[in-house]
Image 1 (tube, helix red, strand yellow):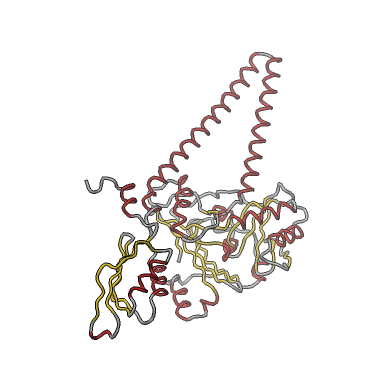
Image 2: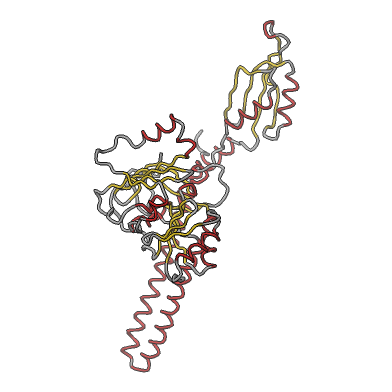
Length: 424
């Protein structure tokens, strides 16, 4: 269950697009027009871009497009970051990504409204960077400007949701996933998806339903269960674009456009300066003043960039002890030991601390067991820590004690690096 608790209303982070497209099952739908197009390959970026071009024959690269994708393409994470400033939030969450989504190797793009929460609790949405890039390039190939990517349920937020006391309950489902969310004060308050194969199981279904209880008596769910429900929808409220993910290539294009406009502004000013020099000293002085103001603005932007870089460095230092803590994955270790210990052997004691495992148990062949641990690449410095012995009630099994060191787990080096004066 993901929860997000906005404290105050906010203005949209991005301007509303010119077109809103929703991907539902094997159809691409343009909101507000009841136009839709059937897709042969709903997951293909090229197929989606071709359908978008057919739905938007008059669109060009200057007109912005928002594409709402199924919830299954996004991952939601919850983070507790008290005291972190709004400008530092994205960098702080990116640094925590290995802990929020362990095992994820591919680059992810972050959706997070730039607004500090009083309780430090944040709900972030992530999308694979490769997916965003492939969609943007496919749209660009057909001369379309794909600027925003969002989860489909957010497209159901109506225009009249801008008042703070207004609450919207959204239920979106397709053949694979059911998603419910609470939209309140122009922000996500609750977010809960569940796979359909899990929903048919009574315990999981009851837990899913219980997360939204108790509901007010006046609660009205906006139910979107079929293609016809989306065909009738109009574009959503502009506040949802605070959660929009902009593909990196689109950001780069925006930056290039800004730089191009700045260059034209500089050239225009230079031309005006020349004209002022010809027309008189008063006009020249005015243009020089504007040029100095522009240069001062550029210097301020440089100082702001330097400040943000220093802030990121400070966050990395503060989170270093957490990100680099020597992790001992107990579940993987237990699975490994279960595979190495034969069925005629058993353990009666297991201890792991500081990268060292201590085992005690019984086995008819403890030497073979020691050799199996020694040959496993996960372990090193494997040795008996006590003599083997036999007991009358264990048959031919011998009692053994083995000490194992985990590779790449150096707690001593970690403590010396981050806590060098703890013992002084």
